[in-house]
Image (cartoon, rainbow, N blue to C red):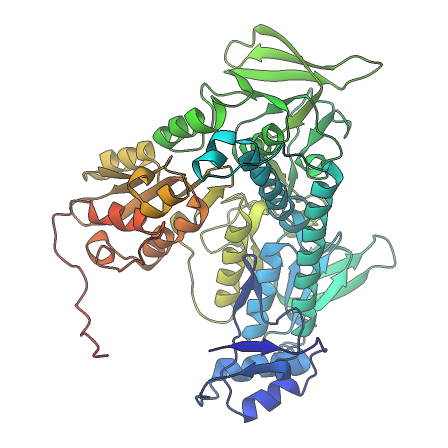
Length: 569
């Protein structure tokens, strides 16, 4: 099957009808860079030609709903509301919810007070991956031993700082445009301004003041995201003391930079800076680096990502005060013991990056108008993302997704929560299994994980009275990894031997962020090891790391699912 696209042209309201009349099964759930799209960068559905046999498909109810949404953004709710659904915040979570709402035939609007795409697209995962892509290639070209192992000789590698920065900025602009166009093409109303809840099913938006517009909605989703967390005592000037927002602009590459925090953000930036020539000092409050990772994976990652590079670290200390560089003086960081609070000396560097996490952006939402009190800034919700008021009661028709609720501060988690909420307001109960949501750190090599760490699994097993088993496979036994001269890596499976339930999977190695999804989907679908171990993987591919991992597990029960009858070919 081959697809060809003609020159771009705007989608018209008649396009959907034309496709429906032809009974064409066109793709309606495309994704771009992990973000849902229903169009090819706003190209007309009529410009899609398929050079294969056309198969009639039934004009089912969901297809009719999409057509209705394209023609009139759904049918307004019978209760007289302006919209069926209004989403406050047009980040990845809000975008995913909006597109799914249109698919369900809901009249939908999305509010954005800044720019479409939110943190992920503009100041987070999208531009950071562009920096990591450029710096990763730089690191590889600088590794003379690695290049010689392929029989390659490379002259002295260099980089253009502004060119690298432009790559990140251009990618963010492109993805932001794609998100905007995808919503416009489906008829989502994009309303500009800050959203404030006035009462049940009622809100206003605008720049604040008498000029604000008041609208009503049957259901409202809060999806306002987060901002960098800056602890007390730290003075951020945006030049020598910066957050990830500033660092992504790559306005300069310091000779020596301190990174406060060794989680996902800190690790990724250490990967960028060291590849571009900086020396890095980690300052970590806990007793070990990478405290959020499975301990065994963390130790291996430290041996590969920290120890061989120009990185040193201080653990078990707080940066109690950070003073920006001024009048020829360096950045001064005052350290104290994390437990005793006793002084532990000072560190002087050219720059400091504050990577201590993120804080929810929930101020000014008007939550007091509906008797909702935040908890450390987070909006309290139940397992269905329904907002809980100060009395512990559910606020009708109000939901909160993504970083603002604090359940799992990941862009794809926000999108999944948004889709779950839309399912509920469309009449279908849905509870998202957060243990099935993967996470990844895009260092070189990458780290990924889903489910429980080994300590978490053993704690759960002790409470509930079951046994935990561990099995591991090495990238050194994988043909594709060896062909790439990237044999440094490990995959770890945590499971129940009595049932075959997958409790957690952790990977450190080449393309770990891509490999984790087989495990996360297995957890989401309730697939047990005794079933997935019979899945076939192409050879030679990195996916065989997971294949060997599941095959090496020792499960005490036979297949838990009925055997599917073989199909003759």
